[in-house]
Image (cartoon, rainbow, N blue to C red; front, side):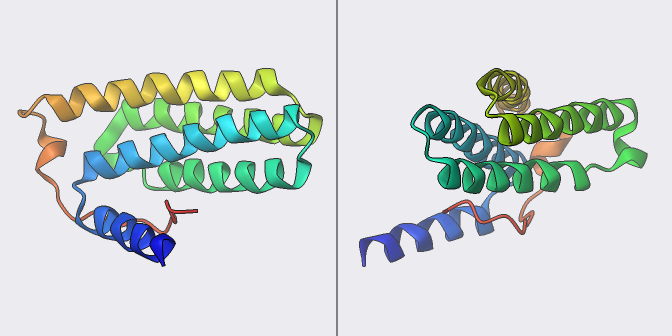
Length: 141
């Protein structure tokens, strides 16, 4: 019962979040999943590792496909390159149990997340004025 309440609350958060908050939620979840996968590798929990990395990859893919290269210009192109690199690192980590690759992916996502925090904290940023962005990613599991 408690899990249902938590899942409902998370769903409501996602449905009512502004664009920047939603992006931060995606980064937070991806970073959490990378940490979990690293721990799963160290504890030889390979099925759990695979599940965590699949979910993390889904999140990064969602971020990648949501980029608007027409409006975002060079920034969107640079983000696409970074997201593709992160996906390659996750793939390497999954195939080769490479925790260093997970560290690389986490470092990049953490730096990008910090940049989005700065955007959110600047009320004059145009992106903060967009509401009700949706995503197909389940942040609860």
